[in-house]
Length: 272
Image (cartoon, rainbow, N blue to C red; front, top):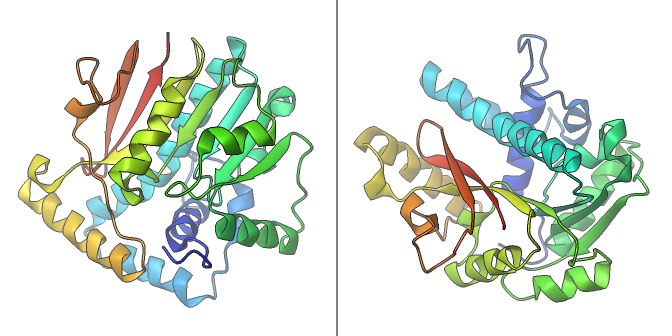
């Protein structure tokens, strides 16, 4: 990724959430009216995403569209459950154009929300929010971090969350764009959080773990994202996240859910 350019894949995810807000999608998996205000339907990028969808087989298109809204809805449902159990901090790792903070329900007003992302992407997002007349809630903080170069622990310590308290993390559509070293460091930090902290994250399966037709589809996505300057660098097997794996010891519960149709997986884990 160009260090001076915002993430195009983050914009692509926002386009997918915005498309889901069309009247034909009813009932909605995710009610996200803010996403519509952050994208430009007249832009070449927006049109290219729509064109990509139209060229896919109907079932693949439907499942791809659902992936982006399902992962956000799942993360937000898990966050609500964590809030009911006393969690009052939410850290979005690779927040992109995520809009939860700007349409947050009333119960979330007592949350402290920390959006972590690359400085260039955050500057771009703040401009998009300002252009759309979307105000910044008082409980939201931006934490600029280059996951490949910066210490997440140091950046968050400077931003103000109390990492001695239970924290909910999300990391959606991020892991595949990080080097293995950066992903290792990020998940190690998450795993150092206190008991009852939780993370919801997504990861991409390697080709050998996919049926041939889905491996071919993954190859097309890989080429497209590489052409955008944001290649897939790390792809994981579910076994590498298991309790028996020495790589990351998720210490209580790891739940995996299949998406798109099985290329992308999202998972939740609770620390004990």
